[in-house]
Structures are given as structure tokens and as C-alpha cells.
Image (tube, rainbow, N blue to C red):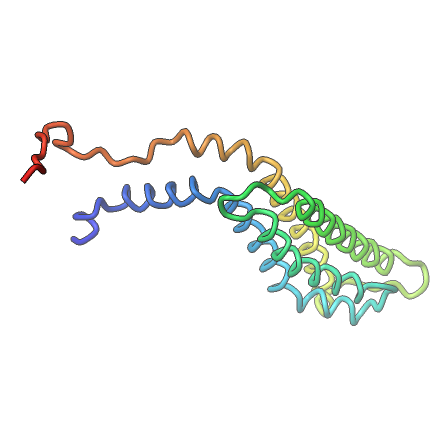
Length: 185
């Protein structure tokens, strides 16, 4: 009943749009959080794959992905500050971190393929080592989510203008019928 008084679902969407109009950089920030959480929540399969394959640099690649994913938050926050222009040097640092994360994921995927397809003692993916297939899938999805985050950051000026065109003001009745107020007494 209280929601009906305050405008209900329509009012909730209006408040969300007002918040996005003020801080449109929250859209790529949410994408960055989802990308990091996706990788972090599937880290057990990736770690098990590293322990099973023991390829050169696999542990370092996983460590770099995790480290630069965390550091990219700090770079993002320092790049897009509220009511300030974009900090261009930090934007370059942010994209460099994204490049390192993508390189580490590609390197890790290449090590998985090398271990599965090597001639001497290849790693066989079966029900006991299904985590290797899962790790490969999770890394591919992580790369896709990272690409979506990069696209959202690059298109930020475009949808910022589009968000500002959306009318979010509330129309108040009887606003124009007010008489003049005497303040002389």
C-alpha cells in the first residue's frame, strides 16, 4: 500500500534513471564488478587446472588476472570521478590493465590447449578432470565479459547523452496557479 502512495514501480524506475543520469559511469562499474566476480567465483576450477597441468607460467597468469582485476577497480574509480572530467592518464592505465588481464587469460587458455594436445603424456579430460573443461569455459566467458566492460567504457559518452535526454522530472499539479506572496509586512 505504501508503494502505491509513493508512485510504485514507476517511481522506483524514475529514481534509478535519475541516479544513472547523475553518475552514468556506474553502468560500466557494475559490468566490471560482474566480470571480476565471475572470475573470482570460478577460481577453484582454474586453480585445480593449474595444479593438474602445471604448465609454465599458468600460476603467474592466474595471479596476474586476479591482481589486475582488483587494481582495475582503483584505476576505474580514479578515472571516472563524480563531477570531474575523465582522468585520461588513468584511463590509459585502466586499458593497460585490461590488456594484461586479456593476455593472461589467452596465455592460460593456450597452456590448457598445449597440455591437452601434446604428444607425450597428454592430459585427458574426463569426468575426473572435468574442471579443466570448466576452467576453459570460464576463461572464455571472462574474456567476453571483459570485452563487454571495455565496450561499455568506450560507449560511455554516447549513452550519457542518451540518458540525459530522458525526462525524469515530476509534474506537480497546480504549480502555475499560485498567487503572489506579500512579504512587505
